Amino acid sequence: MSKTLAYVIITVVIIAIVGGIIAWMYIRPQVAKKPVFVVIGKSVHPYWSVVEAGVKKAGEELGVEAIFWVPSKEDVPAQLSTMDSYVAQKVAGIAIAPSDPGAATPYINKALQQGIPVITIDTDAPQSNRLVYLGTGNWRAGYLAGLVAWQFAKEKGYIRPGATLKIAMLTGSLTAMNSLERMDGFKKAIEECSQKDPDIRGNINLIWLGPYNDQEDPVQALSLALSVLQSHPDLHIAFGVYAYDGPAWAKALNQAGISPGKVVLIEFDVTSDNVPPLIEGYALATVGQRQYFMGYYGVKLLYNMTKMGIDNAIKQLIPNYPSNRIYDTGVDIVSTRSIKFVAPTGDEVVVMSLDEYKTLAQSLGIDPALLGLS
Ligand code: BGC
Image (cartoon, rainbow, N blue to C red; front, top):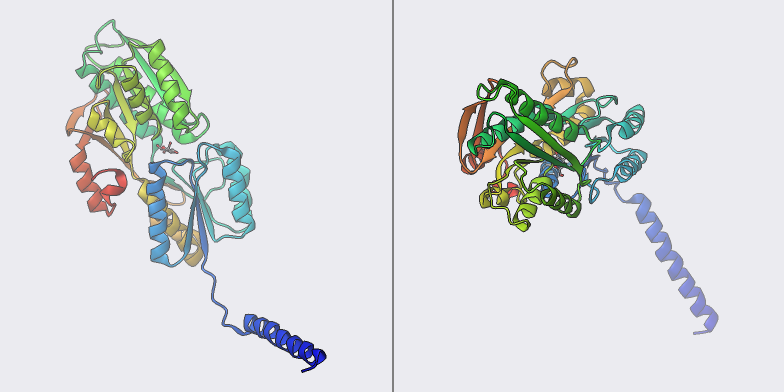
């Protein structure tokens, strides 16, 4: 065979292959792309892994792509640029937990203007046009934490007429609404108890330390907690505003050689990170959020919005819509033992044991192992 003939044959074969590939690309049946829903959280923590599990479950049930994304710690620019890139990709819906509601507002409004439904979860941005807030009623949750702190401090003998009560708050954000509301509610509860408790009637000196901001960074949380305990070894009440904070307080108490239970530590959340401090006796109670449903209902609500229209979808989920655009996922107070008491404010407070909470989680369809309850 001559060289020329060989070149001709090779060229013909190459053209046939390339042509075949191009034809296949055009002729093959087009696989319909699944709609994409995106949920943007605030930081890496087992708390958010539970939200993610809810997101994935809803995605599976609906047969859609449900993406979950978080920055490693509080990171407002990263949250917002991620949101913007999903807006540019024209995803079907977005749920975001804005670390800074003011900064997030123009991003939320821009997505809505482009026809992408946006809701907030975990923490709200009420000045934006977000369609719904789906999450904890944080002021009330913080208030309950304050009532529980008062009750335990009283049991310890720290609440006496004329006494001084030192209270420190460690949080992961000074902009996110959930943090600000929790701290405000907590403070209000303790102030009201100090006025209304018949044994005290205002005759107590409340000393507030902080809030100390660790920006959802566990390393920073631990070093802040340690430095507070160094300067105030006589601390009475420690409040862990975010999921990171209770465990950071517990570690710091341990490292400072303060025996478990001496400081009344109240945590937020029931996760694999928050349960050990309760069992070890460093934390006396925690406020369990139902974050699984923020992820699960978040995706379902956005999906329904694309299927039945925004108003119908919201109406189905939220009582009194349109005057109310908030779906409160609820909280439960959890400790190692179950307690019921009436606070000096008149509120009846129910504290569940870890076992009771485990049963509740099961009945709600949440795998207790996901919450660190084996
Ligand atoms: C808060 C979240 C926060 C998480 C981890 C939770 O208590 O609701 O906003 O990101 O703790 O710090």
